[in-house]
Amino acid sequence: MSSFREACRAGSFVVTSEVGPPKGTDVRGVLGDIDRLKRHVHAINVTDNQSAVMRMGSLAVSHEVVARGGEPVFQLSCRDRNRLALQNDLLSAHLLGVRNVLCLTGDHPWVGDHKEAKPVYDFDSVHLIQCVRKLNSGVDWVGNALQGATDLFVGAVVAPDADPLEPQLYKFAKKVEAGAEFFQTQAVYDLEAFARFMRRVRELLAGTKVRVLAGLLVLSSAGMARYMNRAVPGIYVPDELVDEMVCETKEDAVETGMRICARHIRRLREEGLCDGVHIMAPGKAALVPRILEMAGLGDLG
Amino acid sequence: MIIAKQKDFADILRMLEGSRRVFIVGCGECATATETGGAPQVLDMKRRLEAEGKEVVGTDVAHSVCQELDLKRLLRLHKEAVERTDVFLVLSCGAGAQSLRDATTARIVAGTDSLFLGNSLRRLDYEEKCSLCGECVIDRFGGVCPVARCSKGLLNGPCGGTDHGMCEVNPNKPCAWTMVYERLKQQGRLDDLKVIHPPKRWDQARRPGRAQWRPERSEESRRVHTRTSACTLPGADEGSDEGSGS
Image (cartoon, rainbow over all chains, first blue to last red):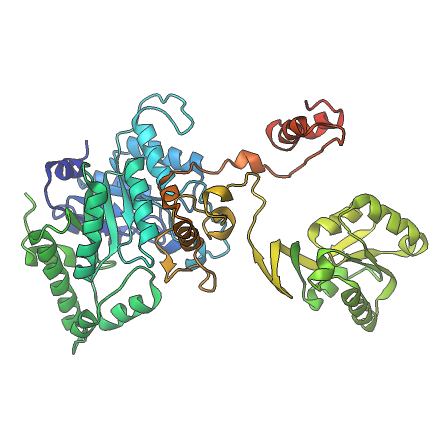
């Protein structure tokens, strides 16, 4: 049984973070990150060829999280696998002790480092959610009985700053109908806009126990914020935060990024804007426990 | 029509290496309209090849290179030249180029790269709106095909990469899902967006495609026959030749 699922069901303010598998076989970095995070968060996401850049498998590293006493959220994208391979990986995940899966469409290969790769997208994320629920109920996608069902807590993603937002909300509702039990959002920085988004989401979730975790990507420089505004669809950093990130030194900027993140966590929690947070600090997992400390979430109990 | 673009001349020359006598075939349909393999392009190719020391033993622009019987007739008209031909350079699509395979044993070189089934927006400006996926679904999507027009072929809504209504994979292309949404909104049919559509049935688009109809068949049996010969039965190609598809 997933303890992350328990925390979600109990109505706790849940905290997740994430690690990225290495490009290569040297896992010292990622194992260090897992060890730094595992006692401070309810679950650790393991990214799946993130940004369409080829890396070690998310399933293998998810298993390492289990082996080290942590709890993984296995990110699974529809980009690289057809429906046979997706189900194959989901059954394997169960074998390896993985109990949470995050269903993703996946960035297009064209944005990654293997631009010539054939994109798969045999399923979309809605189908993948439906599929996990079927495997949980003891049948495969086409209805054949399984020898042993999976027991996977199924999550999905939503982009609050998508433009236009309306089609995104229709898809969100389909993911809920398909059986998603928790959501992680794309990185949010504009909490006013996020609060408006969450009002819409709460309406769609009325009568369900679906939990929504706000995605928080720790800023490390003003340049990073400007870059995302320019180049990353669905992420918008308000001007005042960009200004706040303008610092004398790199260290000051990192410190400021942490402070902003902690401030946002506090506000999201105190105002009950969402049910938890998913903190992303690529390559800087060590910052996450300190941010949680600053946000008053140093001890998750 | 089939949108193809002519390969770089240097690449064409490289493919023709070792073959001196060339017969150039153009096509009167798509390749003429797209100005990749019509009469002017065939003549231009002839001039350029001759300047490189090739002997162009014949040229012609078939009415439609993908009509294999017509093509055989055309080659019979050029019997003498065809017999001297080392290599055919075909300036149609890849389907047209392979039509020749049954009409000759000489080498065949395609001088173009076939890109997609395209709509002509204006002269020399084409857009793919259909990917021949075997099962048309546009009725559910405001007349916009997400299989062909969404970069990821998503059937249940946009990914997170919509950027001001444009596609992150190709910022010059509108997001198909924004188009679907706008049209359904205009039609007062936004409830259609609440329906979960199942994954595509790729068995309906099994490749290589093959369809064989008999003119005397009724519409009803024609439909059934198409499905059996093109899609459903493994090895249907052999069976349908015997007319046993029904």
